[in-house]
Length: 193
Image (cartoon, rainbow, N blue to C red; front, side):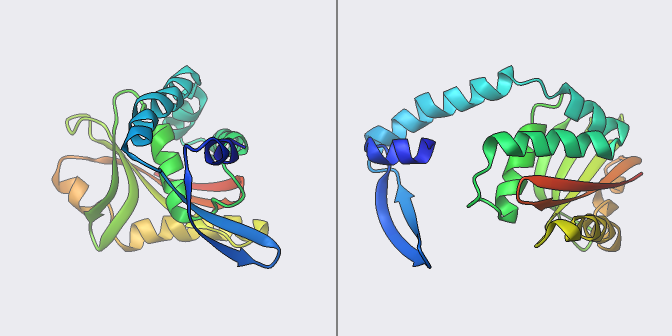
C-alpha cells in the first residue's frame, strides 16, 4: 500500500514494467532531486523513528543467549510486519537483519567482510578486548520444509570457509555462529558456539 501511495502521488515514477502471467511488475524510481531530498529528510527519518520506538530487547537477548527459538519468533514477527511478497531475495533479508541488529548496544555490525576463505554475511563484534564475535550466514529456502536444512547449510558454510580466521588474529576468542534460513515471512535459526 505504501508503494502504491507513493507512486500515485508522484513520489515515485514508472521506469519500466514487465508481465509475469497476469501479474504486472513495475520498476520505480525517485522522480527528481527535490523528491529525493524529501525521501532522505522525511521518509527515512520516519522509518528510523519507528525502528527506535520498537523494542528489540527480546531479539538481542536471544542472539547473545543463543536462543534460536526466540530468535525465530522475533524475526518472523518482524517479517510479518515489514516484508512484501515480492521481496523474497537474500539481499532483502540481509538488509532487514542488519537493520534490526545495528542498534544492539556494545556491538558494531559489519556486512560482507572478507575473512578466511570467503565473506560472511553479517558480523556482530564487541570491542576486541572483550573478544566476542557473532557470525551470521543467511540462506533462502525454496520451501517451508527446506528451512532446517538451509539453516544447517549456512552454519556449515561458516565453519568450512573459516569466517572466524581473521577475527582470531584481531583478538576475538568467543564465537557464536548462526545459520539463518528464510522462507517468505518465516525463518529457521541454527546456532553453534
